[in-house]
Image 1 (cartoon, rainbow, N blue to C red):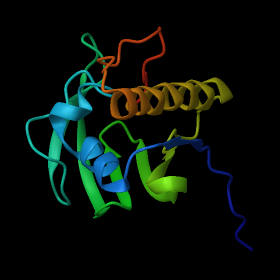
Image 2 (spheres, rainbow, N blue to C red):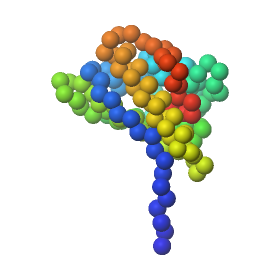
Image 3 (cartoon, rainbow, N blue to C red):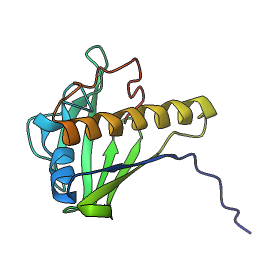
Image 4 (cartoon, helix red, strand yellow):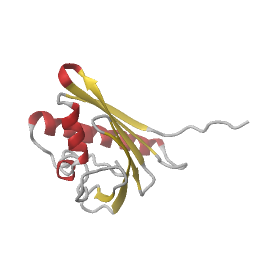
Length: 153
């Protein structure tokens, strides 16, 4: 009998008091992305089938990002060349806001709990920076504090 193997997953959710459309556009536009997530986010708007290069920090190697699925204002799924798989879902929130759910897997068989914990903290920082950008209109350029997405996200 086949036995299911556990999968390491980093998950973070955060409400943002902006419409889902606005949040979705921020997650797909490279100019907006650079203000809260990767240091460099390619030149083209994310779309299904697009493969672009992201650089998470100024001194990090480039990562190929393949957009494998997208449902406008609802879902973005990305496969990264380092093995990470990221899914962002956008749910309705009170008063026309949005709850963003970040889920990352693909840590590999040798992943340690610290890897998942680091990815979760970095995702929380990224969503917090997105929230600040959209709710207050001020970007952090992803440089707030020392938490950066070290692996993929």
